[in-house]
Structure formats: C-alpha cells, structure tokens
Image (cartoon, rainbow, N blue to C red; front, side, top):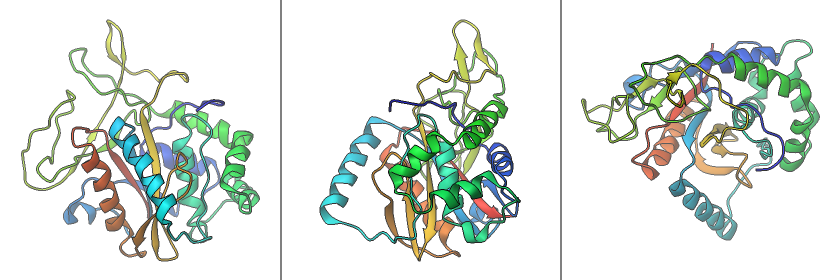
Length: 294
C-alpha cells in the first residue's frame, strides 16, 4: 500500500481507551481483554458487548483465502444493509484506528461524545461518503492522525532477557491477550515461536508481550520504526440490523457472517475468530479485545 504510513497502534485496551478519550468519546463504553473462548472465560467480559476487534497475522494462507472469499462473494453476492458504516484503508499501519472507527461508527447511537469531539465530527462529516471517500478524508484529517501518533508512542514495550525470543508483532507491542487457536492448546509458552503444548482441555487466552529485536542486543523496549514492515492486521466485528459484519479496510466490502443480536454478539464474533485461527493452525499471534459497557 503506497502513500501515507502511520506508526502501528497497540492491541491494548489501555491504549485504545485512552485514544478514544482523546478523540472525545465518553468512557461509558470501553475496550477490555478477551481472555478465552470457552463460556467460563467469555463470561468474564462485561456485557453488553457492541464490537470485537481481532488482531491476526497476514500470512500466505490468509491471503489465498481472502482472494477466494472475494471472488466467491462477487460471484454469488451477499446481503449488506446500507446502515453499515464501512471505509477502505489507504494508510499503511492505520488498521487499528480504522478498526476503532468501524466499532464506534456502527454503534454511534450507544455512544456519548464530549462537546467538540473530533471523532463525532469526523463521523458526521463522512456519513454520506463512499468507503473510498472516507479513506481519502482520513488521509487529510490531521486531528485523528496526530492523536493516533500520540497513542502509538504511548504504548510501552516491556523488556525481556536476551535469551528469549518473540515473534515480530509491531501492532500489539504489549499487554495483548494471545488467542490460543485450538481447544487442545489452552496455554502457550511465549518464549518461542513453535508448536504449543497442551496442558489443559479448556480453551483459554493468555496475555503475551511481543518485542522488537535489536541485533546483538537481545530484546529491548523500543517502538517500531514508521517504515518497519508489519504483518499483523486489525479488523472489527459489529452487529448491524440483526447481522454480524466483518469490517476490514483491506477488503472491497463488508463481510456478512450471518445473524446475531446484542445478546449473542460476543459469542458469534468469537466463532468468526476461531475460523481465522483454524486457517493458520501453526500461528499463535491472535488477539481480541471487546468494546463493553463500562
């Protein structure tokens, strides 16, 4: 993707909530970690939930699937309500901010905005635009860009011993909940990238901390370069007019994943997350956060 490039935003509720507060969103809804996909751990997430953000690795397997999915939908069609707010991504590393915009825009009636809110102004001014026009509008919307950069710098990467090794994951630099992708793989030892070992029959998530490596210096708490290649991506899962939509600015249109409701959104969204994991069974870099009533 050519053109503008922003610093990656961290998949961390503390960072995303602070970012939204700076954009003028009242904290009556806040992002929280999703610690697991079994009913017991999902019950820990405050309800109601109005959106889920998934962070996942862009791999060769995923890109093949994405192409096939697009061709299938173009051939067979799908129902997408005009009420869905969707925008394309034309700025590199802006998927975190676009995911947040998707989450808030499609739940605007539930949100409380502070007087003079930058985000409310952006949503009101872009409501009648096409997805492509919204993308171009964001490119020139300095108030959101500056806030994004501030939040990206505020995310703190914690250091580890030089002997440990972590996957390169610039989008979620700390305090992100790692999704274990099979029921037999509940807890993953994060000191390496490789096959995980089963220790319990239930499906759980575990907090993990990716780091950036400096040659010959081990692992250090440094922010990524703005030009650094990032292979992780955010999408939003939202409920609009009785259906669950996947909103990904890299795709040409929203993806309708079937019926849902305010009461079942979290469970239905997690089922979609599971499909992402099943397509890449050797990958461990999955994280989810939920937008919940505070």
